Length: 326
Image 1: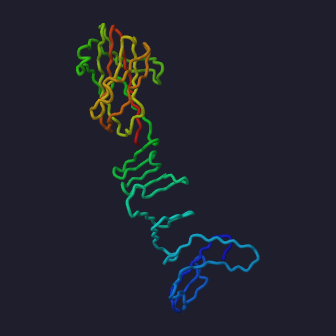
Image 2: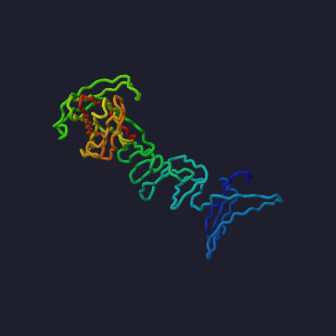
Image 3: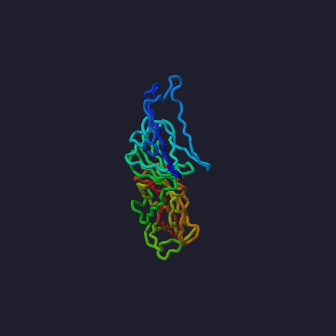
C-alpha cells in the first residue's frame, strides 16, 4: 500500500452460504486479491461485519487512519445515484463533473442553505416561494420567486433623497379648502430666488413668499402632490423643508400630510416649521410619517404660510429621505 497518502480500499462480496460466493479486494481501484467458489456467509448468522486490520512486519511504529466508510451495491468509482435519507456531511472539498440536482421531499423556506463557519446562513433558497436570498433573514438581497425582481432588505437598502424645489411640481396655491384660511387670506403670494444663502450646499434657493399688511394673521397654503418612488421601501427619517421669515413674532409655517390612501397622517397641521431666527434660512423637519405610502402613488402635503403686519415668510426645498428596496 502506498504510504503517506490517502488510499481507497473496496471489498466487493457476493454473499453465499455455500461454496459459490466470491470476493474481490480493490486498492485505489485496482484488483489486488480475488477468490471465487468460496463460502462468504453462514446460514446461522449471515454476514454481519467487515474488519480492516494491518499485518505489518516491522519494529517501527505504524499509524493508520481510516475514514469515510460506506456500504453500497455500487462501487464508489462507478457512475450512480446517491440517495441520502438523513444528514449528509462532507469534510473535504467536493466537485461535480456533471449536473448536480438538489431536491427536497417537502417544500420549505430554507430548503437549501449555505452557511458560514458560525452556522449563519449566507445563501438561502426557498422551494416554497422560489425565492433566493443572499444574506441573513433581516439584512439581505432577495430575488422574488413570483415577480423575479431583486429586493434589498435591512442594512442592504440604499439611502436616497428626493429634493423638490419651489415652485413645486404638481403644486397649487389654495386657501378655499380650509376654514381658517378661507376667512383670512388677505395677502400676496409671490416666488423668487434667494442667493448667497449660508448653511446649505447650494447657496441658491427657490422660494414662495407670503406677506400680509393686515394686523391679524392671514394664511395661504401651498398644496403639492408628491409621487412615491417605485423603489421606495420605507422612510429614512422625516421630510425636511427650508424656511425663512423676517419676523419670528409675525410669521408661522405649519404642514399637513395626507398619505397615499388620502388619510390624515398625524395631527392636522401638526408639523411646526416656523423659523426660530429672523431673516435666516433654516431646515425644519416634518412630524414623522407613519401612514400608508404605496409605491408609484402620490401623497399630499399642504404647507401653510401665515403672516401679518407686513411680515414676510418663505418656504424653499422639500426633501424626502427614504430607503430604497433596490
